[in-house]
Image 1 (cartoon, rainbow, N blue to C red):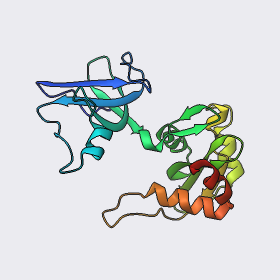
Image 2 (image 1 turned 120 degrees about the horizontal axis):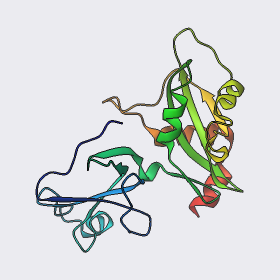
Image 3 (image 1 turned 135 degrees about the vertical axis):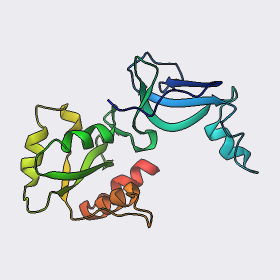
Image 4 (image 1 turned 120 degrees about the vertical axis):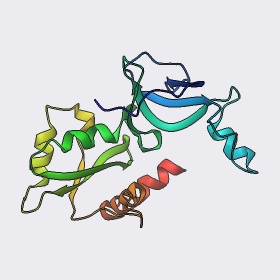
Length: 194
């Protein structure tokens, strides 16, 4: 397992659960840091600062990760990308990494889309390797029985490209918006945000 390294000297790093408690080594949570290298806040924006730096000076990065036994950290995804399906927390990166194991898959991007009954469900956009073909059913069958049922994508779309920024970063929010429009999920989206 690759890591982003250990904490710098004179810097504290911890991983916390949704209630703010530190989690044991190997358990996933939000990466937080404090020390001389952490920003003091956003210039002239106390409200934005309060959203990311708590009263004890911990910067809540929004990154999900685990601490390895050697004290190094492994980033597993972004907190804002987390999908909540019927009360179950689903981390898109885990599903993306699993889908990369399919011999025909070149890349996969996973997002949550609204669902009237479950809150959100999993949608995957998949780009196949050149010259390969696969059906949605084949890709869904690849998941069944190998990952938890609630993590199996309800929606799969085969694409040739992903929406990107000019610097080459994939825009997941655009994937989500396009999937909502394509599937006619606008009503559920309004219910969720209301």
